[in-house]
Length: 202
Image (cartoon, rainbow, N blue to C red; front, top):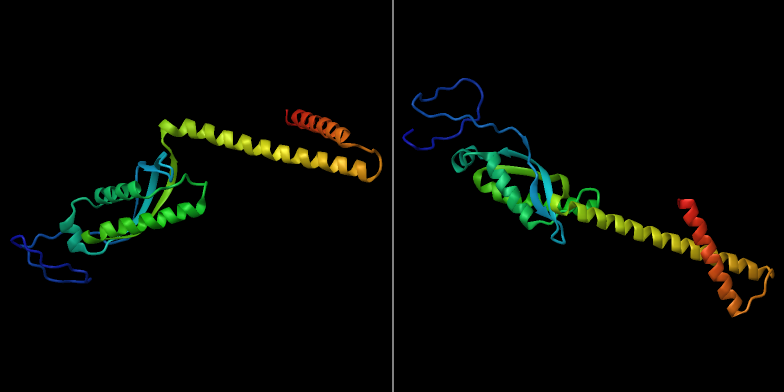
């Protein structure tokens, strides 16, 4: 009335309200808001796109009504500001890191939303992927890392097989080798095992 806030009615049932008062209905139920892809970055500064799910509600109806005009727009800006400060990781890489990032995002967004009467329960990344401009390069890097790991595993297996073969031959007395003959045998067995694994993989 005349630009003054009179109060919030939370009671149910019949009541008399001055007809001159301007009344606004405010939804105080729990709400879920899913963001569009937003810019983010991982711990190394690589560009990402993150989609977050925010669980929130209006706690203080007076602050929420008088403080901001559009609650979801305000939440989007809060989430964007938090993503600029918190590094995130693509989902499926390091689960504990994703949980820590979600907890940090929740704390930051809740602190920004509290002054305008909003209560934020959780802010969780539901989809995190590399930005289009770096996606191809990161895919090639992952493939290279997998190839290097596979080569290291194959080499370890071959070395173990060669060592086991030479040890069995010498311990059973099947052959007597000096240092030069041992080196030649190891070389030949290594080449044979590597060639055999290459044929199997093909």
